[in-house]
Amino acid sequence: MTNLYQTYSATDFVTDDAFLKHQLTPDENSKEWWQSWLAQNPHKQEEWQRAVRLLEAVKLGLNEYTRTYLTPEAEAMLLQRINATNQAHDEETISRALPALNRSWAWYAAAACVICIAGLGWYTYTKKPLPPYQAYVKNLNDSKIEKINQSALPLLVQLPDGSQVKLFPQSRLSYDSHFGQQNRSVYLSGKAFFDVTKQPHSPFFVYANELVTKVLGTSFVVQAYPNDKHVEVQVKTGKVSVFTQNDPDKKQKLNNRELEGIVLTPNQQIILNRQELRLSKTLVAEPQILLEKLQIPTFEFEETPVVEVFELIEKAYGVNIVYDAELLSSCTITASLTDESLPHKIKLICQGIGASYETIDAQIVVYSKGCK
Amino acid sequence: MGEPTNERQLWQDFQNGDDDAYTQLYRLHVRAMYRYGLSLVPVSEAFVLDCIHDVFTEIWAKRTRLSVPDNVRYYLLKSLKTRILHLLKRQERPHQFVSQDDFDDLWTEPANDELQTQEEESINKQELIKNLISQLPPRQQEAIRLRFVENLEYTQIAELLSMNRQSAQNLVFRAVEKLRNWLLPSLFYLFSRFF
Image 1 (cartoon, each protein chain N blue to C red):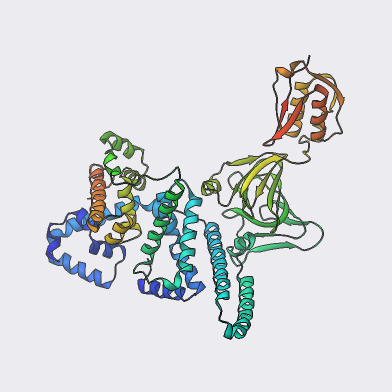
Image 2 (cartoon, rainbow over the protein chains, first blue to last red):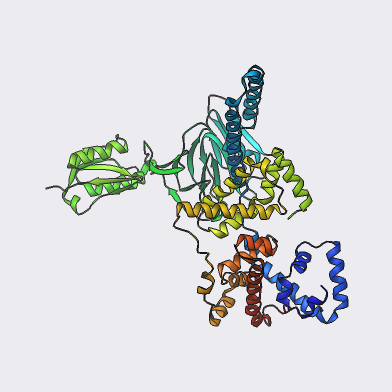
């Protein structure tokens, strides 16, 4: 063994099991062994040192791989899924075993089964995989802060960074007691309206069921009750980006200072189908005018080119209307639309010029053959 | 890696149905499985997580029939790779990864000036070596990750790469030797006390 190393180069050492065992997981034995070997082979000391540094270099190059990061949330969610599957499997195994019972002791068996099933039911009940909100909260530190609104009225919560949250009835909000020091993350079960103070360098995150909402400074509503089939986010002002917990690029989206992924602007909403984890973006049911009171135009039109009307509406509601400007260039409209809602305005205009429309991906698309 | 004796105990506890031992095993190895899985199918995190799920639920279902592995990490990584390959084959996913033996031969050596640019672009040692490693054939990369990060023995690496022990050791040797040669010219100004 000792002789074997006489001709070893640095690379030979670095690929040798005994050398690696000593370098990666040294113990008293290996330390002693190599010390005595080096003492007996002074002429190999230099090569041995080279090998140590070569290994250091390789490990340094693999550092990024070694530190591939799995977020604690993802780790917890995966464990939950695993436990849920295991439980389903265990229950099935027990219920399959039942019909095989021998008749002569069926009575005892039946009694035993009742106890067994009752016990299992209790076990299932107490060990049920945590709903997303509970799983999040479990990962917070002990001094976490949780607000629960059991009343029938909304509860106003002030966060340490000055952001305000209107917490609707039957809703809960949690955050770390160190909120704002490293990140601004809150966890929601139920419905809340957020008015977030602007801090361009510190994005604000709302974790609600399977959906993550990321904002820089804006106001919006998140609705995510534990038993809802959908999670909804509606934007009032500013921009937010949303992605799901299982998004392959989630890590990047969490860390990046920019908003990416699906970005929502005012009067838009995102709906997450929790079963299929499918996101769809639409306009909110009742889009609001975004301009300051004094800037709100009247929607009184007389022989006004319809293209101008669309431009006015686009600006007022922050929505995108898609149409063929050339085809519509000869269309005009005379109407009083100030008190109408946005859907009504569009409907009346389209009727007036003999066009049709539909809403696709939060845009209003107008189909027309033009006007004579 | 933790102490093997400790892990054997954990494993036996888990086989007896101990939830906590099972959770501990999960926590000890899930990150290694995640990084190894991602290195095999980099495009799909969700797919890798699914496969980890399958590995853990399967050992739970079969727990009473399993033997105690010598090295739990090796056992789990091996199961994960088997699972990933199985699903990729069955679904014939578009991102099937190229890992046949011939592939190494197709891999061209980076030209010298290419390496030069890389050195200049690298901000620090870590970046530089990382970039050099990414120039190695994929199987060599996989082998050195398993050897130096997961600390698996050559027999185990050989199993994971479906080759014999000697080939696995050669693979690691070739990778290290190549890295050493690439690094040699730069030692004078980058790694003053390197080789």
